[in-house]
Image 1 (tube, one colour):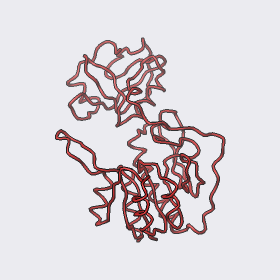
Image 2: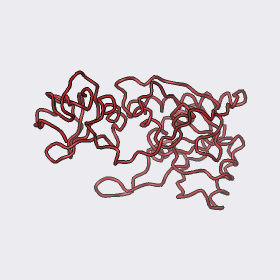
Image 3: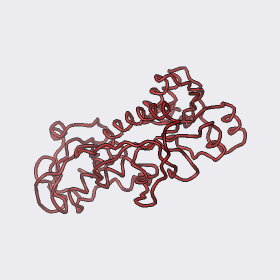
Image 4: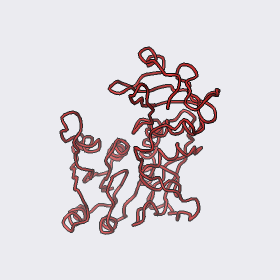
Length: 299
């Protein structure tokens, strides 16, 4: 098929590569503009832009798609379908209507649960037992369109957002290739009005650990915010980013260090398995403790 691809972050790269490998004609790739990054704050292309350019594909990164010129350029591509995954811009109706068979979105949740910006983070933080990927026919509402395909995956006790992100990205790539190959036979299913939840964008203000919460809640926060923005606590006045944890037996005053990196919570305890000091690389617990003296209690 003649495909326009619209995506920006790492999550979208496997999908783009899968479409090319499947033999589709990717006529153009849309992504977010390069952003300042690194110490020099030089403009850095998004992961999708870098991948598309390496594949020799035409790349566009308009700041908006609301203008008539941008919409006319998009329509002139005469695409059969647009595949959208974590693009980062709201698509006006003129864009949604332009491809012959509309715009298909790859969404990393089991809709209607976790519509919105951060479905992987929120699923882990909420303690969901499973999540998945939906291939959705896009419409004007926020992730409200009919679902053509869905597949669920279990969320394991050790899963972080990084781990689940990679698993769902691969699943999304496989599902969209299947969807395009069988588009005429797929039956759209209207989303239920029941069970709707919204995965609001992660606020860095959520990231500081509250040790008075239960160990289960603290563990979910750490895993759900790993690697970005990273749940954190203070040790000797400096931030310690917590990247991997598990619930363990133990009891004490909330924040009490029970030994090593086992920390008492409001109920139960967590063990920190991986963390990162400011200005340092991520480290496993044993290595971290060789250069870090833990206080008796964390605030």
